[in-house]
Image (cartoon, rainbow, N blue to C red; front, side, top):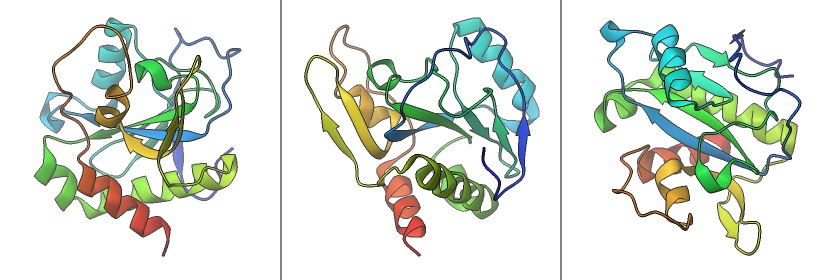
Length: 173
């Protein structure tokens, strides 16, 4: 249970709360929807429509939403990293939107810091490939996709590398 920050709890009813993971990584995603189009309710609708799930979402106003009963509930957010990672969706319209929103960035830092403490996650990113690929540390969805085998897709536009670097630096302060 995260206690250091205010987190609004919502529920994704299509997620099986009995299926759990041992998180060793945090995967950052970019939720590219304009605020005027819809907030968290629109986002949940979009997840349901695509049969996806994620443990957390952080809106542009810095609100943190926990979308599962517990952070270690298995979610379908990053193909080959689902068994080892907690997913965080960050609302924004692009690189500049994410970089200029300090309120949201601080909320993401607080959430990631607490998750790293709770699950003993070292921020340094690494991958153990084999029969069961396992991710460690903090990274973005676009990096995870580079390690997933199977059907080739267009390169993912997601949280950029500099944002992840800034986040990790902020965790060390």
